Length: 213
Image (cartoon, rainbow, N blue to C red; front, side, top):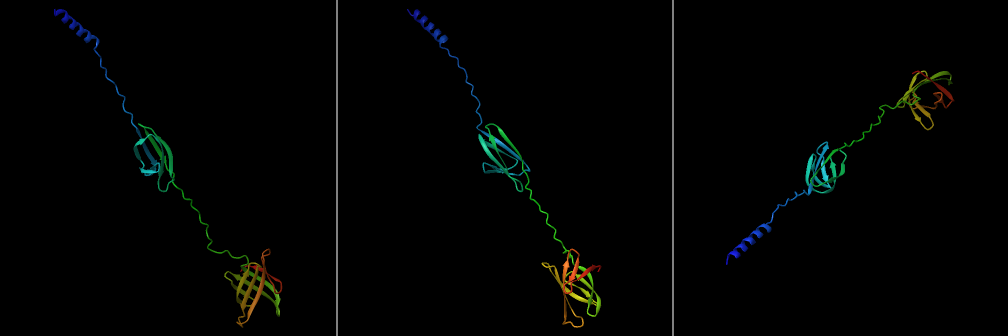
Protein backbone atom coordinates (compact mmCIF):
# COMPACT_ATOMS: atom_id res chain seq x y z
CA UNK A 1 0.00 0.00 0.00
CA UNK A 2 2.86 2.45 0.74
CA UNK A 3 5.27 1.33 -2.05
CA UNK A 4 3.70 3.35 -4.93
CA UNK A 5 3.73 6.44 -2.68
CA UNK A 6 7.44 6.04 -1.94
CA UNK A 7 8.28 5.68 -5.62
CA UNK A 8 6.34 8.85 -6.43
CA UNK A 9 8.20 10.82 -3.78
CA UNK A 10 11.59 9.65 -5.07
CA UNK A 11 10.69 10.52 -8.68
CA UNK A 12 9.51 13.96 -7.65
CA UNK A 13 12.74 14.59 -5.76
CA UNK A 14 14.82 13.56 -8.78
CA UNK A 15 12.86 15.84 -11.12
CA UNK A 16 13.22 18.79 -8.78
CA UNK A 17 16.95 18.19 -8.29
CA UNK A 18 17.63 17.99 -12.03
CA UNK A 19 15.30 20.66 -13.41
CA UNK A 20 15.38 23.34 -10.75
CA UNK A 21 19.11 23.53 -10.23
CA UNK A 22 20.44 27.02 -10.85
CA UNK A 23 23.95 28.18 -11.79
CA UNK A 24 25.26 31.26 -10.01
CA UNK A 25 27.71 33.43 -12.02
CA UNK A 26 29.67 36.24 -10.49
CA UNK A 27 29.34 39.88 -11.81
CA UNK A 28 32.51 41.94 -12.81
CA UNK A 29 32.43 45.67 -11.76
CA UNK A 30 34.28 48.31 -13.90
CA UNK A 31 36.90 50.39 -12.01
CA UNK A 32 35.80 53.82 -10.77
CA UNK A 33 37.09 56.60 -13.03
CA UNK A 34 38.83 59.55 -11.27
CA UNK A 35 36.87 62.80 -11.26
CA UNK A 36 39.84 65.21 -11.16
CA UNK A 37 43.11 65.91 -12.91
CA UNK A 38 46.29 67.78 -12.02
CA UNK A 39 48.49 70.57 -13.33
CA UNK A 40 52.27 70.78 -13.20
CA UNK A 41 53.93 74.18 -13.72
CA UNK A 42 57.54 75.25 -14.15
CA UNK A 43 59.15 78.45 -15.38
CA UNK A 44 62.44 80.01 -16.37
CA UNK A 45 63.47 81.67 -14.12
CA UNK A 46 61.92 79.74 -11.24
CA UNK A 47 60.02 81.29 -8.34
CA UNK A 48 57.22 82.87 -10.37
CA UNK A 49 53.92 83.36 -8.55
CA UNK A 50 51.12 81.13 -9.86
CA UNK A 51 47.58 82.47 -10.22
CA UNK A 52 44.88 80.00 -11.25
CA UNK A 53 41.73 81.83 -12.32
CA UNK A 54 43.04 84.79 -10.32
CA UNK A 55 43.71 82.77 -7.14
CA UNK A 56 47.28 82.50 -5.80
CA UNK A 57 48.49 78.89 -5.84
CA UNK A 58 52.17 79.09 -4.83
CA UNK A 59 55.33 79.50 -6.90
CA UNK A 60 57.03 77.55 -9.68
CA UNK A 61 57.91 74.74 -9.90
CA UNK A 62 54.70 73.32 -8.44
CA UNK A 63 52.05 70.62 -8.92
CA UNK A 64 48.39 71.41 -8.32
CA UNK A 65 46.29 68.21 -7.81
CA UNK A 66 42.57 67.51 -7.56
CA UNK A 67 41.41 69.93 -10.23
CA UNK A 68 37.94 69.29 -11.69
CA UNK A 69 37.58 68.90 -15.44
CA UNK A 70 37.61 72.19 -17.26
CA UNK A 71 39.58 75.12 -18.65
CA UNK A 72 41.63 77.34 -16.37
CA UNK A 73 43.34 80.68 -16.78
CA UNK A 74 46.97 80.48 -15.65
CA UNK A 75 49.07 83.59 -14.95
CA UNK A 76 52.71 83.67 -13.83
CA UNK A 77 54.19 86.78 -12.23
CA UNK A 78 57.82 87.49 -11.34
CA UNK A 79 59.50 90.72 -10.24
CA UNK A 80 61.31 92.56 -13.04
CA UNK A 81 59.75 90.23 -15.66
CA UNK A 82 56.80 90.48 -17.99
CA UNK A 83 53.64 88.69 -16.78
CA UNK A 84 52.90 85.44 -18.64
CA UNK A 85 49.42 83.93 -19.06
CA UNK A 86 47.62 81.20 -20.98
CA UNK A 87 44.54 78.97 -20.91
CA UNK A 88 44.97 75.29 -20.02
CA UNK A 89 42.56 72.37 -20.22
CA UNK A 90 42.58 69.90 -17.31
CA UNK A 91 41.10 66.44 -17.93
CA UNK A 92 40.16 63.92 -15.25
CA UNK A 93 42.82 61.32 -14.66
CA UNK A 94 45.45 63.24 -16.60
CA UNK A 95 48.19 65.74 -15.78
CA UNK A 96 48.57 68.90 -17.85
CA UNK A 97 52.01 70.55 -18.09
CA UNK A 98 53.09 74.19 -18.41
CA UNK A 99 56.72 75.28 -18.86
CA UNK A 100 56.95 79.05 -19.39
CA UNK A 101 59.87 81.37 -20.12
CA UNK A 102 59.39 84.82 -18.58
CA UNK A 103 60.89 87.76 -20.45
CA UNK A 104 62.80 90.31 -18.35
CA UNK A 105 61.57 93.90 -18.34
CA UNK A 106 64.13 96.01 -20.19
CA UNK A 107 64.33 99.61 -19.02
CA UNK A 108 65.52 101.82 -21.88
CA UNK A 109 68.60 103.81 -21.08
CA UNK A 110 69.15 107.28 -22.46
CA UNK A 111 72.56 108.68 -23.17
CA UNK A 112 72.71 112.18 -21.69
CA UNK A 113 73.73 114.93 -24.05
CA UNK A 114 77.14 116.12 -22.99
CA UNK A 115 77.17 119.67 -21.76
CA UNK A 116 80.11 121.65 -23.08
CA UNK A 117 82.44 122.63 -20.27
CA UNK A 118 83.64 125.72 -22.09
CA UNK A 119 81.76 128.28 -24.10
CA UNK A 120 83.28 128.62 -27.56
CA UNK A 121 84.67 132.08 -28.18
CA UNK A 122 82.70 134.50 -30.28
CA UNK A 123 84.05 135.05 -33.80
CA UNK A 124 85.24 138.59 -33.17
CA UNK A 125 87.52 137.68 -30.24
CA UNK A 126 91.14 138.37 -31.18
CA UNK A 127 93.33 141.28 -32.22
CA UNK A 128 92.80 143.98 -34.86
CA UNK A 129 94.79 146.95 -36.09
CA UNK A 130 93.73 150.23 -37.69
CA UNK A 131 96.03 152.75 -39.33
CA UNK A 132 94.26 156.11 -39.33
CA UNK A 133 94.79 159.79 -39.13
CA UNK A 134 93.84 160.95 -35.67
CA UNK A 135 94.63 164.27 -34.08
CA UNK A 136 98.06 165.53 -35.08
CA UNK A 137 99.20 162.63 -37.21
CA UNK A 138 98.84 159.05 -38.28
CA UNK A 139 98.72 156.40 -35.61
CA UNK A 140 98.21 152.68 -35.33
CA UNK A 141 95.32 151.55 -33.15
CA UNK A 142 95.88 148.05 -31.85
CA UNK A 143 92.73 146.52 -30.35
CA UNK A 144 92.70 143.22 -28.44
CA UNK A 145 89.34 141.80 -27.41
CA UNK A 146 89.57 139.09 -24.79
CA UNK A 147 86.91 136.80 -23.39
CA UNK A 148 84.97 138.04 -20.41
CA UNK A 149 84.61 141.58 -21.77
CA UNK A 150 88.17 142.74 -21.15
CA UNK A 151 91.05 143.67 -23.44
CA UNK A 152 93.56 146.33 -24.44
CA UNK A 153 93.68 149.32 -26.73
CA UNK A 154 97.18 150.46 -27.66
CA UNK A 155 97.64 153.89 -29.19
CA UNK A 156 101.23 154.64 -28.34
CA UNK A 157 100.68 153.05 -24.94
CA UNK A 158 98.34 150.27 -23.79
CA UNK A 159 95.05 150.98 -22.07
CA UNK A 160 92.78 148.51 -20.33
CA UNK A 161 89.36 148.37 -21.98
CA UNK A 162 85.95 146.91 -21.29
CA UNK A 163 83.69 145.83 -24.11
CA UNK A 164 80.26 144.33 -24.70
CA UNK A 165 78.45 142.91 -27.68
CA UNK A 166 74.91 143.52 -28.87
CA UNK A 167 74.01 140.28 -30.75
CA UNK A 168 70.97 141.84 -32.42
CA UNK A 169 73.01 144.52 -34.19
CA UNK A 170 76.52 143.01 -34.00
CA UNK A 171 77.73 146.25 -32.50
CA UNK A 172 80.68 146.14 -30.09
CA UNK A 173 80.82 148.84 -27.46
CA UNK A 174 84.32 149.65 -26.16
CA UNK A 175 85.12 151.91 -23.24
CA UNK A 176 88.36 152.72 -21.43
CA UNK A 177 89.41 155.33 -18.85
CA UNK A 178 92.07 157.88 -19.67
CA UNK A 179 95.18 156.75 -17.75
CA UNK A 180 96.08 160.37 -17.13
CA UNK A 181 92.55 161.45 -16.24
CA UNK A 182 90.63 158.47 -14.81
CA UNK A 183 87.40 160.40 -14.74
CA UNK A 184 87.48 160.73 -18.52
CA UNK A 185 86.03 157.71 -20.33
CA UNK A 186 86.83 157.05 -23.97
CA UNK A 187 84.09 155.32 -25.99
CA UNK A 188 84.34 153.49 -29.29
CA UNK A 189 81.49 151.79 -31.17
CA UNK A 190 82.37 149.18 -33.79
CA UNK A 191 80.39 147.12 -36.28
CA UNK A 192 81.51 143.54 -36.83
CA UNK A 193 81.48 142.38 -40.45
CA UNK A 194 81.26 138.61 -40.41
CA UNK A 195 81.91 138.29 -44.15
CA UNK A 196 85.30 140.05 -44.03
CA UNK A 197 85.94 139.33 -40.34
CA UNK A 198 86.64 143.00 -39.68
CA UNK A 199 85.62 145.60 -37.16
CA UNK A 200 84.53 148.97 -38.52
CA UNK A 201 84.92 152.00 -36.29
CA UNK A 202 81.60 153.76 -36.66
CA UNK A 203 82.91 157.22 -35.82
CA UNK A 204 85.12 157.44 -38.90
CA UNK A 205 83.90 154.38 -40.87
CA UNK A 206 87.39 152.92 -40.77
CA UNK A 207 87.95 149.14 -40.74
CA UNK A 208 90.16 147.30 -38.30
CA UNK A 209 91.91 144.31 -39.86
CA UNK A 210 92.51 141.13 -37.89
CA UNK A 211 96.13 140.50 -36.95
CA UNK A 212 97.87 137.88 -34.83
CA UNK A 213 97.79 138.62 -31.14
